[in-house]
Image 1 (cartoon, one colour):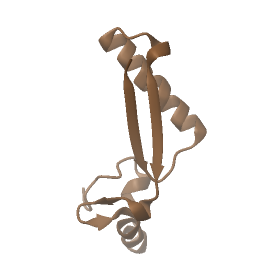
Image 2: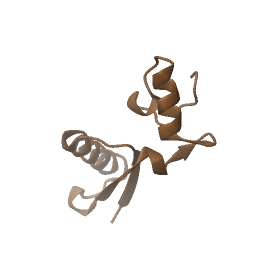
Image 3: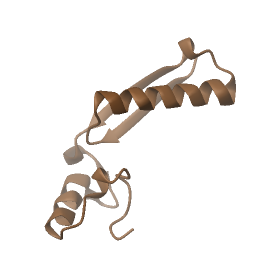
Image 4: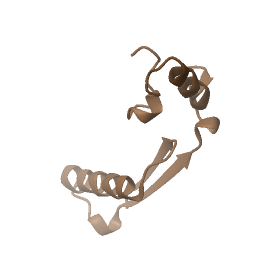
Length: 85
């Protein structure tokens, strides 16, 4: 029985999480031949104040990017992107 744990920096809508669950389940079914009823997925939303990458809190990096006028990396779909990438 596959168990998948996903941690997100920040939050996602219920619809986004449902899509993630459907996509990950579909991948395990198609690639590993698993029964979809056996696939278990947990999505954990971690506050950007409690999530660090590249030596700094995501919240601090997002705030700095907002001050500079660019969209925060955690809102661009890649919470682990380094500034300037």
